[in-house]
Image: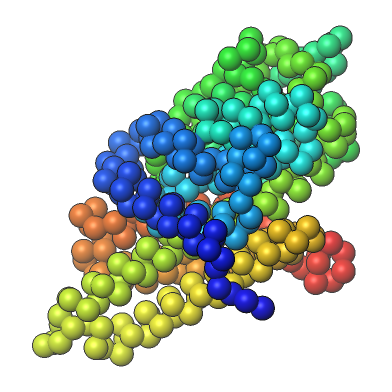
Length: 382
């Protein structure tokens, strides 16, 4: 197996790296502090193709492969995990779902502005009482002529406060099961009865806007339904497989940034008459960081390669997401330890990496859910 990047993959990685260092790095600490959504840089990301990286060129995207997406996600997330998750949701959850499962009319109406970076998208599955148990959703959609009338409340919607188009999951029967779910595209500028709730004050990824959404007799055209009635759960789970590669890549970027900061700090910080990098205790931490980061990268590449080959990759995506997210938390914890008191200070970015890493074990399937998915495949039940 060849682990070397192709010329095109290196070009996309370098494009993302240059953009991250030149445009995002100067504002990363400030937007973390303020929690302000970075409209300008997100629109610039769209203009250079990062919001439509894996979407087909026929619909305004770049048409890149998943490995290119992974390396670009890592570079963006190394500098700012908030930008990383915005990019991940748009590419993995929204664009991918529309291109794979949407009609040609839906692709033209919704995917083209999303993949070309002219509009921001969101994915809305979680509800206050249904997170990991996605089949327990209570947001309802009742057919009324050419519309579905939607009622309910969604929570923890990344990019919800700013999204033009939202892929919404709802049920036709709140007392039923996953076979009653379906997916609709909500055009937020054309949907009466739709409202955005307060922006969530989060521990980390603070500049990625997150909110509740409410629907009060909101009419959504039947033409906006993705797939068939009852097919929403299968659609949601299929999209999440791709999304888990994105979040694994985000976690990898956070871990890599924390490791690089620790390595440089260990070389210049002295204790007991020599650089702390010369002390075996610090060397062991750095070795463990490097090993787990490389193992994460290989797991992610494996999942991405299977996706590019058109093979099923649910198990590989779950493994990559689980291991990379736990690695991000391990590495950022050790990074603070290496930095000592300075690691606990907002003067250095490692405390931000520490806060940003925590969510990667929760969204798009908790670590516990990933273990369930992996176990099912290992036992031949997947």
